[in-house]
Length: 519
Image (cartoon, rainbow, N blue to C red; front, side, top):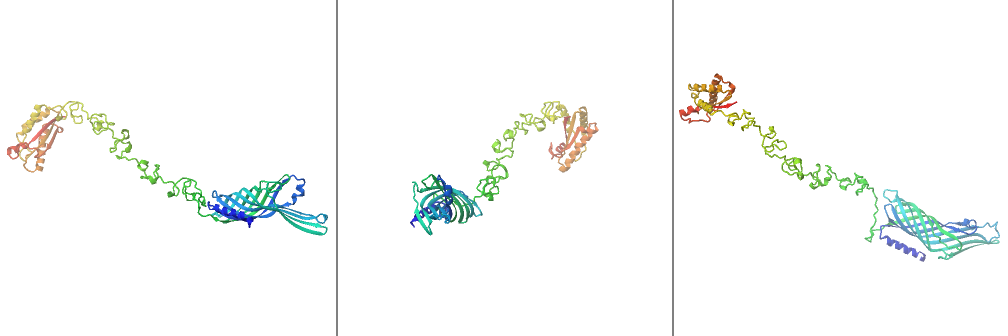
């Protein structure tokens, strides 16, 4: 029991250490073939001794840990008890060598170590749940000699008597000649399959240090080949120390765009996005660079300072308020959003106004209507546009005062019977004088306005007044005055010039009035 007490202490220490990290703790046991690779300078050794050396079968067992480095790479230290060494076996032919004393000889070297291998192991999953894996690992080992012995078995014959003897001697440990060194170094390689918590592996161990000091020039290296059966005892629980958190076992799924959404759930695996849109970017419907989640006008391109909406255009002139000096009045860009100026206020902007400082009309490009004779009557209203005149004669020269007086006198002497368009006898002389005047002034144009008193109805009087004006017109035409120089109008009982309550007043209201203008 005392022989295995150090190993038990080591196992308890490993178990305590494992509580501080997310590791697997396991046990392992196996069988192996142990041999020694020897080189020396002894004459004839290669033929006289070396052929009789062979490997011996031994056992190893211990505990191991598994600490994940990545999802497939693991650090697997272990502490094992392992027996190494070799054996020497030689048989002598009794018939041919009757005089020999030794018929059979077998020497077995057993060197026992507490060995600490340190593997870096890579696992390749064989199932989706990652419980079944192929693995391969390699790493150095450090071994401390624990015990050892030489066991000799000899069969001798003396004449016809045989004798068998066995002798066991402990090996000596140290650095002196004939002793075995305390420390051994080497390298291990293993490969195998993991089925859940069970592992089965084969391994090769090669010593790198000279473990024995012979009295002759030589080297001795351990070589071991074996198989190991392992059992994982389960994962450690929640870390007891906050500074050493457990490493979760997880299956890493590719995330090509590094947006935190694995490709198998990402509808846009090559473009970074958000979970809300299944790994795609937030949409930007109007392509204004402001995503729809922050855009108050999703279908109209805008700017960030207006939450994705366009800069306002209060007056709707196509110039946004930030560049519009007249925000509430439609204008044009070249005047910073203000209307084109209209200096003279004639409703024609300065860009289309040939007379910017003088009010005019559009048909003359913003200039006033021309007045060629400068008489104050524009050419469109001036019957004599090239001769200065007066407004009351439509821009033609004024009619002399005596002619106007004659015409006014004539009109006062033209009378009608009550309720009739028939001229009174006294009217003819006046009309004859008027016809002579018009004949001598072919430039004159006569307008006849007829009136009535208030006898009868207004509708009847209106008709009567027109008839009286036409009676005068027809009389003058009969005197040779062209019809196109005479205009007749009727106004009925409007504009009385005397009191309609007296016969004399009524007579005066039954009248015609003349207005003469020049053509």
